[in-house]
Length: 342
Image (cartoon, rainbow, N blue to C red; front, side, top):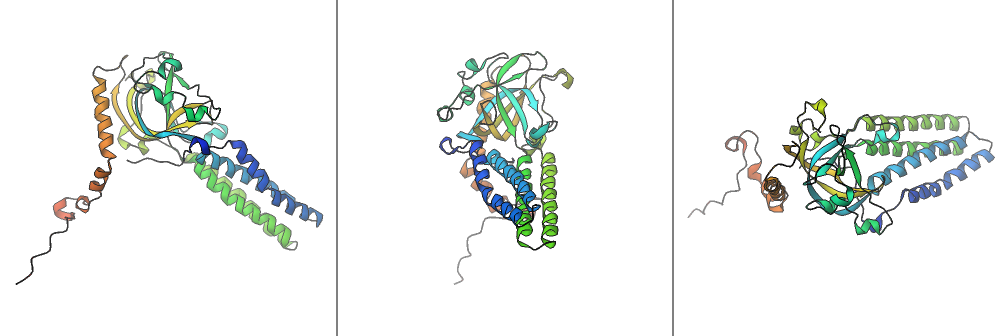
């Protein structure tokens, strides 16, 4: 399967709040503050300004680290679900710091709920209710799971939904830029303190400007590094909701599979993040198609077979390594050695 993944979930017992990262940043800045105080005492007050750049870069690195490696809490490996596409949250068009969250998100009315279903009803409704229900590992941390809702554009009916995301690399790119900026800003402060003037200040200023440039490049690259359904399956094309502006095609019925996690950054909901597989398996015409259970079973079996270790071993076999035709550029199994000559 082809998909992008830049985040890693943690087990509930290993989860840390963002406040713990902020505390670590503050403690880490103590040496920089000491150097800045030494510079001021030595008659070089300009050097103290570089500690501010260190603080900004270190804070950005800490936040990105938390976002990528501690924000999501593991709930139980990869899970699949089928749902009607209620709303799309594209990677572009976000404002403020949210613009760096370049994931492409979708909200699904889970099979076989009907529009208008509440969180309380949907979370106990088989076969997928468990996916949006509060899990013991999360509630044990004192975190709530009120769930996510989405409103159908055509009917204005609000429903409890499963949130799922195709990952973008915006925060990953921002972190890389901030890490480079942090190293350069530390070097700037050290140069200002330990290299005699005027060269120390000049070198420090150059390093500080390079740090700002690194952070800016990381931010600009991140804003354009967006997630998309095409990352998983280029043949999916545009996804459709029940929006009349989309030619009244009817919302897509999607089969999705991904990592089942809890997102601690929002008000509290479970989601599939990242989406590792996505297929369009029908259109919404006001109700679920008859006999849809058989379709779901076929897709479940297909993905189970595709992820079976025996299947992967077979696909990696040399005899399948051909491009034009196996008779032209194939790689046959190693033949038995010829019998000895007598």
